[in-house]
Amino acid sequence: MDHLQALEDQSVHILREAYANFKNIGMLWSIGKDSTVLVRLAQKAFFGHVPFPLIHIDTSFKIPEMIHYRDKFAQEWALTLLVGKNEKAIAEKQTFPDGKVDRTTCCAALKATALKETLGEQSKDESKHVRRYRFDHQTMSLKEDKNTEAFTGIIAGIRADEEGTRSKERYFSPRNQDNSWELASQPPEFWNQFKTEFAPGTHVRIHPLLDWTELNIWEYIQRENIPTVSLYYNQGDGTRYRSLGCYPCTKPIHSEARNVAEIIQELKTGKLRNIAERSGRAQDEDGGGTLEILRKKGYM
Image 1 (cartoon, rainbow, N blue to C red):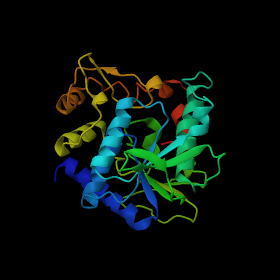
Image 2 (image 1 turned 30 degrees about the vertical axis):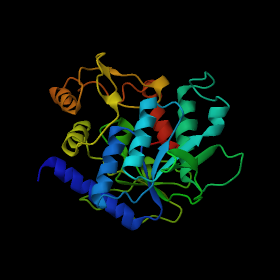
Image 3 (image 1 turned 180 degrees about the vertical axis):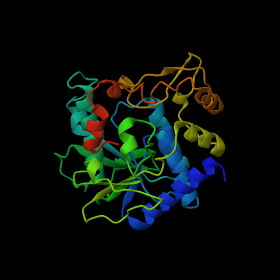
């Protein structure tokens, strides 16, 4: 068995354990390469069907190609897609692009708070900051989600090698009732033994891609012929995105890679060895442990 197949088998096992042990779980879909690989793994784990709703947190500042890709493949793959938005912060322009707050505060509102409230029990309270919508396959549009039940767990496509704070994660990671993450509360995981029993009220994050690397992800995309957002490839200007986020805070890298095979080759040469994968994400450059602060507040 080659290494890529071993990774696939491990991730499929984690997904099936999650489905068997947790009620009402969802899967985060950022539209990026990692979470899209996670969608393919779920299709493999459940014989072509993804039994979890996919959840996308839309800040309203995503690059347009990402939203087009999301809607196209939600329709093509018959996915149950939920979209959460912090409409109050957006309407009041309490965002970094509008010049009202710094990047960390903007991310906390449009991502961490939006995620927390999207996963929580829904209400019809008009004062509620965050709204949860469901993708309508008939009209190809978003309509308010009529299911008000909270999620007890969420599957996310984070990898330990992507960023420092994520290397401290577990496959099954407990959060408190506020979805906050505390390193000290993480259970040990030895010899493929995973803790799946937690106290009532515990919110659980499940990370099937934890031991994958950036190279593994692209090799799997090539092996499985998984369609990805065109932003990952050089379109002729000598740049491409290595990590996708909001357009005011994400910049491309210099690269001549025009397809998956060329990205794999670029990674194998070591050209990007000393450049962080998220180096194009401005919030990671602000200093002060911005991403760890956001993760403690419930961000991915």
